[in-house]
Length: 250
Image 1 (cartoon, one colour):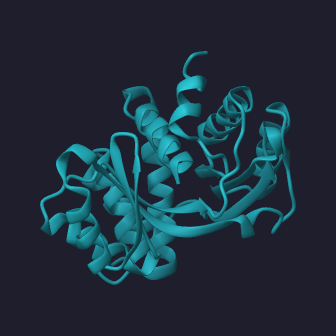
Image 2 (cartoon, one colour):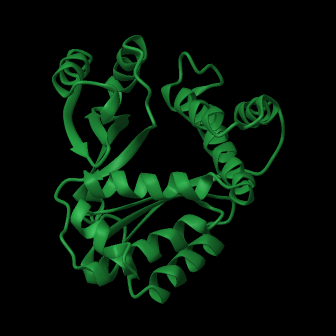
């Protein structure tokens, strides 16, 4: 779990700058379009859409942009047609990597993502090559200084969470995707600040690596994440606190 937690922190820092905000809004618009297309434009009836809208609001995406993306998804406004694709592959050290993409040109994106893997010392695999190593989970991060661990555990378990772990300065709560809203509502009701929440692909058995391999995997993940069509990047790297400290010495 800690590997996912550290990658979420890196992404948050990257997305915080004005230079990256426009690209982030573009990616979130695509997520809203796809969610509205598949499940309708009512976020109260469409969990995927509600989740996408919440992510957009969290990074101050304008209301007009959100509403326009919903209308494009429901067909009220014309626009490009996006396709959902998940690429699977291996990074340095044999670390498994999943890449979730929304693209209007499958052939272009396929070639570009493959090149990113190869330049970083990895390789893109066939469908199903690493997907079985991950499972979709709801993930929440709560500042550890804000709450007692036992009290938090009781609240989230009652709401349907699976587990709670300490990861650096935060508690990481995981749950089945179907319990995502209930866990979020329980945290809100308790008045707890959530620094990050998402539906993510979490590695079932994180892989240990040395600092140099970890740096290479993180560089691959950042290069993939920088691609305009890439929505999310996940890996099976077990990024422990000790390993992160070594990586940051570079």
